Amino acid sequence: MQDPCQIVRKSYGDKIADDLRFALKACIGEENFIDMHPNRSNNFCCGGGGGFLQSGFKKERLEYGRIKDTQIKTTGATYVIAGCHNCHAQIHELSDHYQGHYQVVHFWTILCLALGILGPNERAYLGDDLKDVNVFHPESAM
Image 1 (cartoon, rainbow, N blue to C red):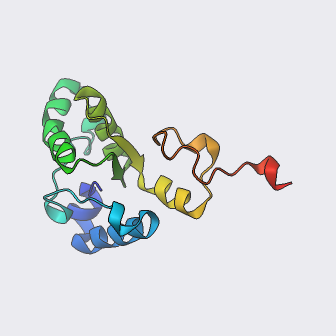
Image 2 (image 1 turned 180 degrees about the horizontal axis):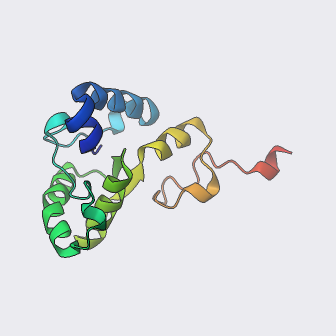
C-alpha cells in the first residue's frame, strides 16, 4: 500500500495509515497484504504529488520515483494500492518505465471489488487475475 503524503505524512499521520490498512486487509485478507518498508509516516514519496506529475519535468520525476519503484519491487507484490490519484498515475508510470510488472490499483477499486459493486467498465487497472471477479451485469439482474 502506498501511503499518500498529503493524508498520512502531512495531515493525519499513522492513525489514518492504520485505518487504510485495516480496510484493505478486510477486503483482500491479511495473508495477501504485503507492506512496504519503510511505511506509514516514514514511507517514501512516489514523486508525483505537489504538482510534480503535471510539471513537465518528466525525466526528473521518473528519476526521483526510482526510489519508490525499488521499494515496491523489493516487496515482490503484484499489486500496489494507491489511495491518491497522483500516486496512482506516478506509480503506474514508474512500473511501465522501470519494467516493474506490478499493477497499480486505486484504493476505491479494491473496496468496490470486495463489495461486488465494481462495474465492468471500471477494471482497467486490474490484472487478468481480478478482471472478472464479482462482475455485475445489470442485464442479468432482470
